[in-house]
Length: 144
Image 1 (cartoon, helix red, strand yellow):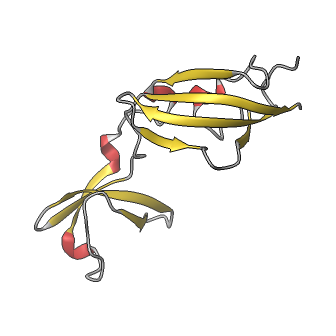
Image 2 (tube, rainbow, N blue to C red):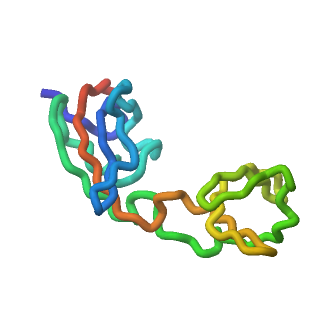
């Protein structure tokens, strides 16, 4: 029976949950997620869990934040003057905005605080700082 190794393309079904059991993502009702093992296209916690698995195998994978989206980086939070936001943008906590760095790089940010004169924006991934659990099923392997 063929076992997954680095470089193989795998197809998995998964359900990702937070430690409290809240589902944050799932492939349910969709095609399996396909990616090359070891390529860095998925979080490290999933990449390291797949080698040695066989098609049809199921596994629970615990990915600590260091192997998921990393710790929260306080440097990625920034307060900006409210008048720096276009007047036609109706701000709400949790909403995502697209910003451009001085170098021209486009980045997504979330509104995390609304003050009278300032808005705090956060460019951390929404799951940064969180340990995650994945219930995975290896559907198939394309051997490299």
